Length: 99
Image 1 (cartoon, one colour):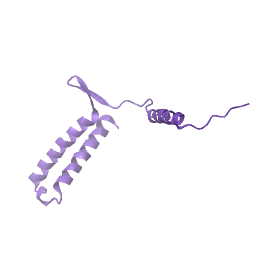
Image 2: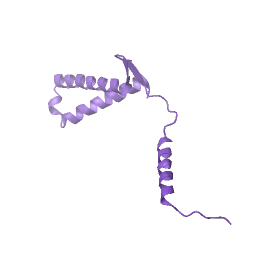
Image 3: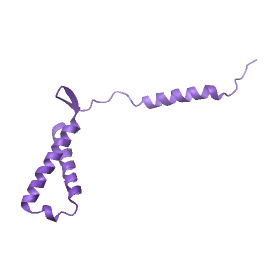
Image 4: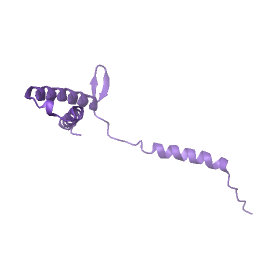
């Protein structure tokens, strides 16, 4: 005679928890390493360099726009200069790393 096991929540919960962990960790496969640079004895992500380049580039653009006289006519200066910094940072990432 074959005995049938009764459904038990005590057995289902550990199974669901372990399945959840396995599912969450399944995305941790082999991925190409992110570009990083050796700087002051540690590895930094490349986007930090691109952000610094973008900020410095936006400052240079601001100086140029102030000298030309266009800075006073900008409607939302903060948004414009953040957009300049992002565009310069993205362009530097494409130029340097080809991401």
